Image (cartoon, rainbow, N blue to C red; front, top):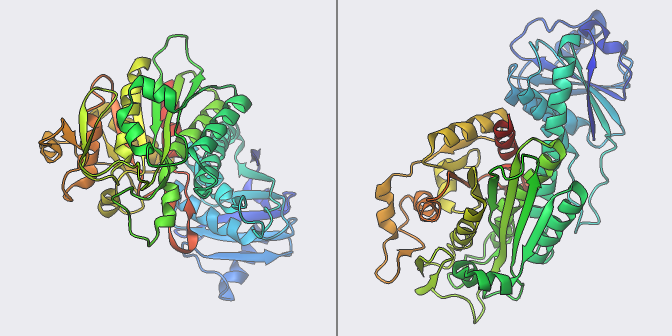
Length: 486
């Protein structure tokens, strides 16, 4: 989709040529500063009771008098914040979604400028409204006709807003890729399919890719990863993607994404209710692919490596059993007390593997624990790191991208829960602080570099009527990497 910034004074909004004009109103303003034609239409709508200046209200008008566009949408934002703009834009574009508008122009009342966060909010709202999953659903509605969105701004803002839209558009493309991968059912999105997606991404965007099979993983000694994969008929894949935009030899930033393409829980099998949603357990892997897609389009001056250990977790006769002890790539032994705590097992070998890159920073992304959902719900991703500088960069990146995270503790006392009588550690502790003890487990494999863990169990997908992948935290990760390049 084409996003552009156009220079225009508010007095000319009604005369702008387009298929639809969207005007974002501000609930806090009695006078929206509109030209007479638009002000009159707004007054009439309010007096008739069709619209109120309350956040979330939307009104569609067809062929309004005095407006060049054949479609006019009023949408009310709570204030000038990027978060409010996103909500208002989502409402407006939902009203246009099933129509024939190809070129939509957006204008904001009372805005004091369009910052990068606002641009990302607007672009994200548009792409979210336009996204339709159809890979395994031939009856899905056709894609919206929308092809171009223009944002009206003052001339002084034009260059900055255009650059912000370019960044936001690349992030939105990455989010869309992550959603598409995660939404595919487990019999379509297998570890082999993830490897194919990585190869396609590398081919189309000039990345380097390497895919290791079981034999290569066995040779390396990834005992924890192999243990999880041994119960599945689907072959495992260990995927390494490289974006080389920085100087040769410059330390890369590494993203490690959990790629469990379906998680039954193994022998510690999950309840049947909502188990279908375990196709989303590769949301971390999807976010790595999406972030590399955005980075490759934006071409920042840094090096990035994406690592994805991918397999299924199935309860076959060969599957790993509770009480089994395996040896990880690091040489540390692990007593597998619960086979449904498998994500940390594939990640720990990947986290040891990335030592070879001598990384500037490492972030692992995983739908790791239900405990994180209990702690934070579905709004904030759980952030775990002992590195204050990384924490601040990730928190700020989350705020800028409207993809927020919340820092959780990593006190040494939590490590007590992972003690084992039969191995160097158990793979689970008790129920208390489950998201924290999972992060403490991963920390045992990250002592040689700066590291952060993102638990996206509550943010990677939605349930219920809106069931589907969100594409998070592609926005957060991309903003973090752009910050490192700056």
